[in-house]
Image 1 (tube, rainbow, N blue to C red):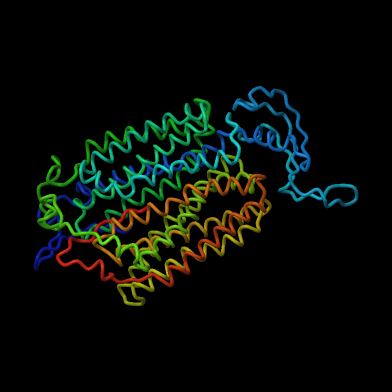
Image 2 (cartoon, rainbow, N blue to C red):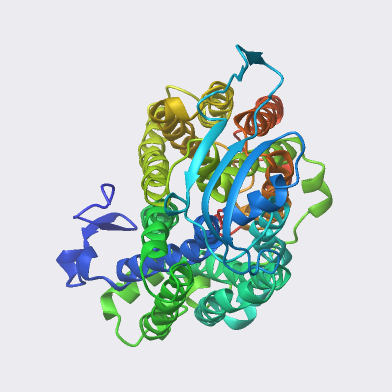
Length: 542
């Protein structure tokens, strides 16, 4: 990563000594940085298994059969169907359709005895051109299944810190990744059985998904010296954006592989990789430097000295959490409001971007994966550059902390909403412009991480983990609702229906921005000022 220094220093009272001067290993051979890279790969694996269904559902569902069931008996649509084999049409089996012509547009406008069509509303589809799978799941069912992970993801948000305190980060992460990977491997069998079984399984994956994310980040409380905490956490967290960028093209490629029926390969591949990573984690990572058998003694002493006596003993100062004051704090409520609306837009894109590209832009599965990759690479770049920009504005006193957070939130939260309105008027004849806009929308969204998400540290550094967990739990609701709302609104798969989704999202992003601008603050709140408090806790991203 660009922000890793090749000359790390440790600050002791009255001195500043290079690590290499006292015989401890340089950063590229240090245990703590090795753990950060292992953690980054763990985050990649976690988010690959979190987002695998979003792309896989494009190639596992028999869209031809779903269209036949929906439009075959329609009196408003004009449908010409030649079916060679209808076995399993209503049971999830394969449907062999040689030729279909759909007209889902308005047929009331007739000119010279012929219907007037828009190029994207009428389409002749050859069976070889469709990425049809085996499962006949309608749009509503797809929406419910896609939101299933977040039902489980919400359940342990607040209580996971107590589980980590009892078990330790190493065991929690290993348990989460192992069982999440096993459940991912079982997804194809479950999907052949019933979509409702997949819904339950995805909820269970969500539970273990949070084990992994929470556990990895909590580990840095005992491994990251304060002067290196941002670097170590950013290296680890970069895995989430890398995974989000990789999951679409990689899943699209696996869907096309002629092995195990195509789409099941997506789940088998991610599941096996996750299990392998679990054993690497168990061998390489320990809960604190004192118990690591292979750490350099001088690196252990450096970390322990930097973190202080309480960290070396494995205990921390216990302070009561003023929950009543927190839940009535306007700055906290402003962040929660912006967090919920931001997650609506984020989860909408993560869960439904491949579907939108298939239904509106008419991209095939391979193009879908490639074009879905580009926006998230832009988001990763925006997070890295935005963090440098925000720190520079604050360090050089060009803007206060409060105004810096609000500026980043406007650019990363409000402007993408405006661009969504523009996007909603474009169709498949302008697909390259749509991809460029999507890249800008999702890329700019990364700047919100430098605004509202960092704001938890600003208003309550001592309670940052706890209030972030509460906000995370509340903001998971969009993950459940967004796929279902999209499925209900876009039943006919038209641009006009997707336009409703984008207008709704733009309105929510605008509302969240306005509330945050009014209520947000950039200084420590009175209820968060604790005498003799420990160093700020590490907030957990969603």
